[in-house]
Length: 380
Image (tube, rainbow, N blue to C red):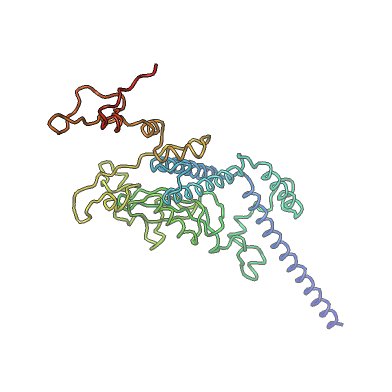
């Protein structure tokens, strides 16, 4: 009898413990799910002011750099019909900058307060429905109200069997935390900047590059600032600022550059050869001896006039060959006749005082020999 009661009590205790463990596991799973849904709801809501300000600043910087590149194209004489190699490189960079500006504006517009409020509202409604369906919100109370205390003490299941970090809050190399906004960004996104090493001046190249794009951005940096030494630097976005950038080639911080921030100093005088657009080896074109120390005066090329699109091909070819109305008149003009020499008494030649207008007539040879020939009669 006693053994039967003991067996029943043991089975009942095991069942109670099983139900308790099941309830604890379900409660822990629901709490984790509710925390995840609450995090998604916060991310789908209005972004913080810091995130919006960073995108607005990035858009403004990109617009200013586009204006600078357009001015550089104008100074180089790179018009619509210019196909020089240096013009093509700068034009390609300008197109990438314009595409990047469009991406920045599209992302900024998708934020709450921009142009994508409809999608954001629908996403929030979907997450709220999931919260209610899983019992995360009851009468306006959220299941995560005691989240801080639960993190400090842990659930009953965690105290019994050990604590397990929530997968979506664990650190990962493939994500970057934004300390100001709390937003997690997919890894591999860098802002690249072109640094002029002679004075430390820098300007952005791309706002969304990966490490595989560094070679492309390095070439774009050299094309946008020819004639001087440049280097590509980068920093993560949006968690880092430009002052925290490092060299793409060596990983050395920008602050360690000997000329870092020199261009910002009040009494700094930039060297004559320190500037974008100063052509290298220009002395070879001008016939200047490279071994000489004499400076070469650099004259920028004059912009070429654009051809008239309505002009026919023959007229354009004539103008290109220097054939115009004045040249045609000069070619068709008759040369003035030279004065004919006249025999003098002394057997020499002398020029007439009076100019001979008509042709000279000689007597008939027979009449000149036969002195008896009658004189000619004029027929009237």
